[in-house]
Image 1 (cartoon, rainbow over the protein chains, first blue to last red):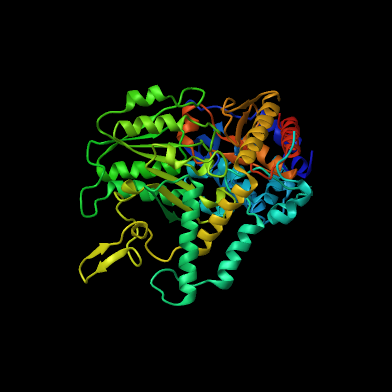
Image 2 (cartoon, chains in turn blue, green):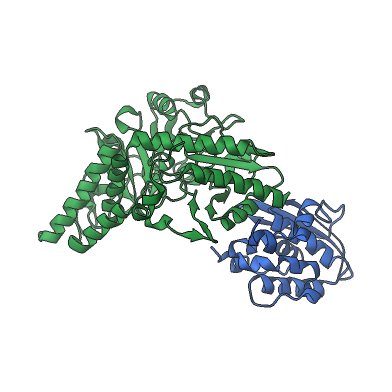
Length: 152
Length: 413
């Protein structure tokens, strides 16, 4: 259709939106947090089961736009089985790419690189970061939400 | 289907519309949020600033007199525009939100006498309201000890007079309703609702933000104590608006802003207050804004209210029909004819994604909760996509909207 269709809604993004991974709830989460954007109604809850400092299981549920759902879905794949340090590092790297502070790097970001185009749409950055904010809240390392929301 | 204004002459009339966005001609369909301003409004404001700028009232010099005359002329013109009678008055505000806060605060705060709202009293607000006609009432209820009750719409988002009749009680002191719901485009039977509430002894409040540029309410034939509207939704400047209504009711309001221009006499420890409208207009007002607002009203009248209403109904019907024909699209308030708002939800496609893809085609729409979260929750809906029309929109733009939504659905599903 257009640049947005190519840049934002790549096949892998739309595919994750259609069939989000780890979508649902955990029976016995050890950590959980909810991320909400009252402006647009996006609302995502992330649940984790941490074992020995590692993400032993993760799930998310809620509602949101394609960018929000795809980003959360890819996030669950990216952090499952990894330790918290790696999850935090990935969140920081992804966030830096979206806010234009770092170049997209497929080797480090994996599938998440498909969302790098969001950096061109300031009003959509918070969509891509909502699930990640919930994850960081859940593990007790939240960035202040206002930083991305400064965008109009 | 014809358009109201000629596309070819539009750039000279509405300079802000003559631009491309993302390589396509701008189709500005976000008029329920803010309309564009015609050059005659800008010219009127420039002429004021260039020739008559001075502070109003109290001044004995020529420019101050000219500014005072311009400000008071704007008030007179706007009262006429709203069909005000001799028992009505109009107070300038910064917009609808400011006007509604002035009412809600003014009825729950005592100055001198007793506040209109007392503990145990009831306020009824409709469930269609923008947050600006809900949150101030929540605060007023808290301040006064009154109870806030909601006139809920039916599952199709309509308000019913019978439901209000059941809700009214001898303790109902205020009834607040919109003339057109900004989130859904629903046009409630506000004339009957206001009349019923007024008969029951309540003061009535009409949020006319979405019904001032077209289908404009006429104060003289309404049981309306307070009518609030914004300038920027009627081709006027941002940061302007007014609270109009029955003088006797406006006199009940405790002022929100104390200071210069609103006082009669001031001592070290106390003061007495001026008569309306000055009483509710403390401080230096936005005089150029008032002049621009009156120029916008004159522009609407010169274009022709009947022609504007007919054109906007036709655009709304065109869009509602075209969108509803797409697979998985539900148009809200499809029955609402006297409305320039078409709000819709699409199965499998989030409004934010639709909005971004439409913007890529130069089409500006609004997406989200539209400051009406309780309403959308009540209707079991999440965020919506909203296209809203103004006199300058065309049927070709409606076609572009429908085609672009269809294409966006292809990308997103």
